[in-house]
Image 1 (cartoon, rainbow, N blue to C red):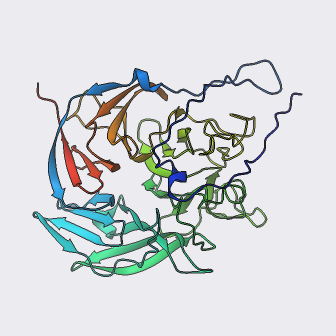
Image 2: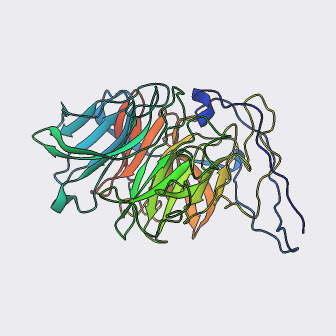
Image 3: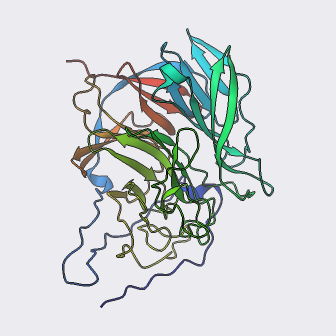
Length: 397
């Protein structure tokens, strides 16, 4: 039997740029992977180089101007919008006006931490629940860690607030909070939390929070069939582990799966299909390297790890993610869109099943794209840092 060696890097991730939100690139070459117990080849993850990326001409329309870092957005049934500002404000945008919602959670606002995602319960019309992720100072230790809360909106105020999950312990590090929220069609809630800059301690240890994708019932209870229920010292909310910092999460209605994209270090951003109990390898395996160009590891895969569906070299620093189902953009339907913080555009990833077959830049140079969603009206809405929220206009026939 051929045994692959694996080891952790010796260098700690540096603060803000370690989430992939940097200006460096990587020139690492693709590595061919093979099986371990036989000569049968292991399918190689896909990457499409930058020189194969094309540009597409789209126009946009400003919808919500003058926002700083609108981290997440969700549409209410009346067409109005809830917007989380990273600094801690919750905005209700209705009839062209920004209303500050009272009772937003206290956030640990440092580095990449702050007010993060917002999502409506799929049964919002009947139950009124809204879910938020944010960096919370509550709990053990100084600093903060990612929390999941649900609440209701009544008379422009959050009520019935309950923290459903709080990662621990707190730390004063300012990086890798995650965090996005998604629901599957069986009523489960998923949310992501980054490794909090402790790559050698958290992602590979199921007794510790961070570097994980979690699955809960919508009331915060833990599903009895979660993969680590009953395991000694395990965090039973964990659904998958070995993640670095997922800032995009979707439910793919065609495959019935949760997909995430996550920041690599210098190179090696990934798209992963989330599987029950799977280990995605960070930092034992990665396509990225340290910011001083030293290797984190010489391994790209291993029999105990789940390979990415796609990876980027160089990193684009992805944030926001959508699987397009709208007929308003026939050329995008059935494909993926992801924001790029680093290169300041929206990336269109053409799909053939689970294979990425092409890359295209939309709205090149628009600014740091923080979130991308498909609204209930079928239009694509894009949050751009220090600009606001814009609507992608369909191409005219």
